[in-house]
Each structure stands twice: as structure tokens, then as C-alpha cells.
Length: 115
Image (cartoon, rainbow, N blue to C red):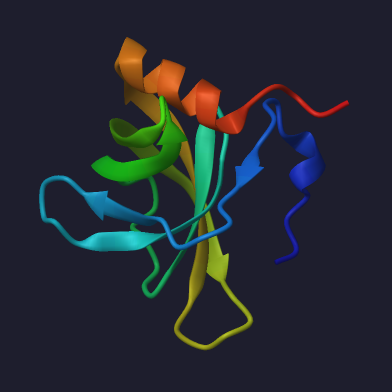
């Protein structure tokens, strides 16, 4: 990946275990969560997304209120590029819609900003 990630506006948390991001309309896995912030997320997937595509997605956040939390948010593709492994693609999405409960759960999962 050769993107300049120092332009991030919000702290991100990396996924330490597989976290599939599922398109709520097709039940197709868009990719695995790489990292998540209050404003967006990055995925690693097996296909290039459509530029600017909007998706309603679901995913599970572990350890929220001593359980797994099922988040359902709207995202829009901002960029994508091939990964070093053939057939894999990095993609970045902006969160465009989320309920108050989903926002709170994402904030809780991310935790306080690192100093």
C-alpha cells in the first residue's frame, strides 16, 4: 500500500482477528475489516469495489458491553487499489449513515485516542 495515511482525521483501531464486512442487501462479504474509525473503515477484499459505490453493511464488534455488537452502517467507497497479493484489493470507505447506538458502539470499540 502506498497511500499517505497520515492525513487521517480520526484515530483508527486495527482489527486483530477476522471481521467480515457483509453487504446487507446481497449478503455478500465485501472484505475483511483492516481498521475502523468514527468516520470510515478500510477493507481487504477479493474484488475491486465500484468507485463511489454505496453499501449498507453489517459487522460484529467484539467486546462491546461484554458481548458482540452487530453494527449496521452505510458506507461509500472513496478509493481502492490492488494489494501485493494477486486478487486482493485494499479499499477505503467513508461512513455516511449510522444510528446513535452504532456510533456509540464504534466509539467504544475504538477506545480513547492514543497519545
